Length: 255
Ligand code: PEP
Image (cartoon, rainbow, N blue to C red; front, side, top):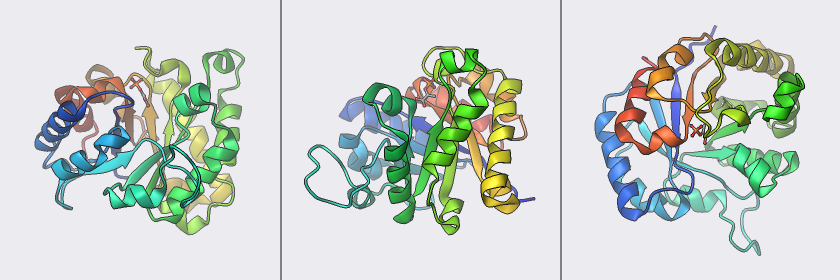
């Protein structure tokens, strides 16, 4: 079975300002200079270049990420940002399907699919977020929602692009609420997501694909979550805005 190296993302959402973005990225890079765990930082678009300047050299375990990308390469799409533009800024990973884009901005499964295809086609890592709302969980639909979102988002993805896919299972009710899934519940969802990957793409791809857990991950709960066999890292929102706590979460992944 493939050995999966853990990966942790810090999704800053629409937070920080220029000075704070530079300070935070500098503090994270200093704290995690020798980390065996790969780290993605997802600052707001205007701070990509300044944060790229802080992250600097290619040997760092800290890589630059973007919170979104549009699926067309260029053209009359006011306000949108293409994958090539992100590459020009030094971006190595892009989030797609984040619940705030699905449920606040209204992105459909088709849009998430188009963005996922575009990011992977350009050779970047795609961190594809999926997860159920509280109502869906209470109706017992967690697994069917995860399966539907995953299947739709990956439609048409060439299998040789899948080595650059990271999945983030993020139950919507746990994002920014302080309520995290228990390690057993998260493990159960991850195990089923991996089983679906096995059905869709075969065992080698399913065994190699990293599945992050996201939803109120903190220094105090990270170790128990990261100890589960199908949890391969974390996507962190609120706690990624504090360099010390974020570094503790990354260290909780071990190697
Ligand atoms: C997220 O934004 O992806 C997230 C998981 O946020 P939080 O850690 O704040 O719940």
